[in-house]
Amino acid sequence: MKKTLIYNGECIVCGACAKRLPSWCGDKIDVVPFQEVLEQFPKVSRSDFEEAIHFSDGEGHMSRGAEAIFRALSGSPLGWLLWIYKKLPGAKFVFEKLYRFFSYHGVGFRLLKSWIAMGGGWRETYQTSAWFFRRSMGLIYLFAFWSLLTQIQGLYGSDGILPAESYLSAVHEQMGSASLMRLPSIFWISSTDITLTAGCWMGVILSLLLIMGILPLFASASLWILYLSYLNISQVFLNFQWDILLLEAGFLTIFLSPFVITDRIRNSIRPSQWIVFLVKWLLFRLMILSGIVKLLSGDPAWHDLTALTYHYETQPLPHVLSWWMDQAPVWLHIGSCLIMFVIELVAPFFLFAARRLRHLVCFFFVLFQIIIILTGNYCFFNLLVMVLCLFCLEDAWWQKRKWFKNKPAESKSQWPRWIIIPLACVILVSSTSQMFWRVGFQNVFVKPGVILARLLNPWHLTSTYGLFSVMTRTRPEIIIEGSMDGQTWKPYIFRYKPGDVMRAPGWVVPHQPRLDWQMWFAALGSYERSPWFFHFVRKLFENSPAVTKLLETNPFVDQAPLHIRASLYDYQFTDIMERSETGAWWKRKYLGLFCPILSRDQFISPSR
Image 1: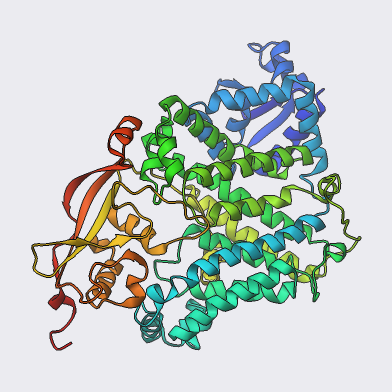
Image 2 (image 1 turned 60 degrees about the vertical axis):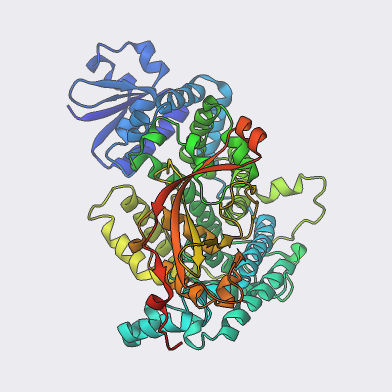
């Protein structure tokens, strides 16, 4: 027998959902009402068919409810849902409860019917949300450029750890005339110290223009080009997922910006529904992939929901509230992890649902990001995710707020469809293929889209996401010390990463101390995997002012050390009793040397 999905033909919602299935699965399965095939399945009673949808695999096995839907989808691009249903602890319970809710309760019935009827808010208008979105993106850019301004010389200046001029010269020598297309950046024109600093100041000024609504199209386009230029010369320090997310969101901001001098809310332009959908699609991919990569990693800590018992202590830059969260009971960590999976794996689908469901998803997404901010330092990342949530709120929602006085006038998008639709298609094909490739659907249908994504990769128009796919269970920390005689060692103190066990972890959001972050990554591997580390050590031997400025304390201000060692320690949070007795936030154990003890003569010739 052929695989068959059997639904209640008298249920309007069941019928509407079932009729959509062939568009995903083709002719692989039959979708029929049970009234037509009741006699073919004598082991299932009429009342069972009336209560729930069923799926026959053609070999005698019958499933029902949520499992039936996921088994029917197993041969479609959504086939990974069955894997989540079967493998993720608690997922079966949650999905079946949701199915029963929508099947047996009038409110659930109406919500699902509304979801299908409304078409995910495609007919809604988002003039007000787009207006707030542009200004919020200006604020995120401001955080990013101001943070980079304080570090640019130490990271990429001529006396920095990874000088931009040297890097671009090496790229040009290797790639020749293809360099600009492979690595688009305005710093091919000039990458001097003055240019790098001026670029950050220009980013700050353009961000303020976008916040104030002055020349929004010019400001948003210039900000995207400028940040892309920095990212493409960054090598390791500016290549985090939020940097790429900012570029992807920033590119869409260009097409949400009107052709005006002053962007006032009263004359705000209605954004294209295609671009609104792409912003929601970006948020969907970010959230759903964050959950999927955790499951696909095979890490037992995610499968048994114990990952958060390690997370607060081992994350890159914890702060004081992280210490307090680490003291929470195990049951709270397990419950939090389960809720996180629901938010990342279930809630994203409701981004395309009816307005009330979108509002609910917006609330949970924003609350989720606030909790992350309160328990860890992730620069502007969580703020940017909250900005993406703005398009869950349509104009009608804003106009119902008592504090909202200005209503935008009726208007149409200024961007022509012959630009928007091809652009949207390219982004959708590229991003969808990347997502399926990331989760393991690597077949001939996906490969052309992946090739397209690789061609667009230098411009970072689409990307894949997913943080903490494997949870680190320990916290190795590199402590760098210098010496004049090889006997007495003095530590270099970093501004934010753990060092002195008595110092409380600091809160630095929305700033990102990029050297401190890279030190966390370096400690997780070997020194051979972090070649930038030796460039950093060289600058310490040279007593480079630009680099030592990135540190809190340089114990060799007058004369650079003759020897440097990097020791590896295992850091752990103290508990409440240890904290009250000793006053320490951390306890540590010596593990050995991160790399061999280094001598100044190895890096700097005696003639210097």
